Length: 115
View 1 (cartoon, helix red, strand yellow):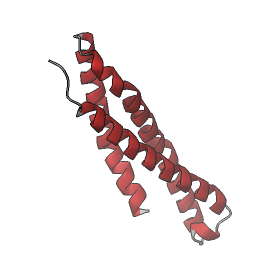
View 2 (cartoon, one colour):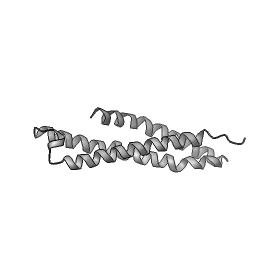
View 3 (tube, rainbow, N blue to C red):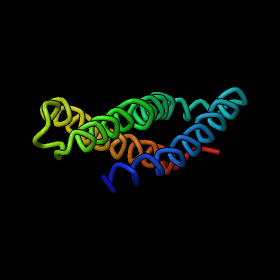
View 4 (cartoon, helix red, strand yellow):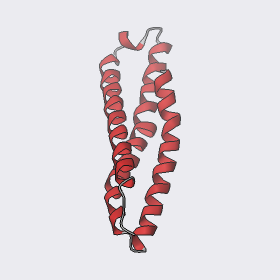
């Protein structure tokens, strides 16, 4: 539960930073820095995955957790345990995708460019 809250709070910063990087890259591409096109797809994928996790998956998991607690049982013993496990797996996979996309964007931005 604490990890989901942390991921959700950090996702706001990731979304803001990725949006800034993508906006600056688009401005520089229009001014002739065509090698920055390589960060467009990973940045868009990062925005999509982060927004999906933060605004769809984690709130749904919080709802399932609260519903189970109102029924007086933990999530693992509730009727929604399988659904919660699927959402938890999707959240973990999206966290891995976010790490890979962040690494890919950082790697592509750190390549030396011709002046």
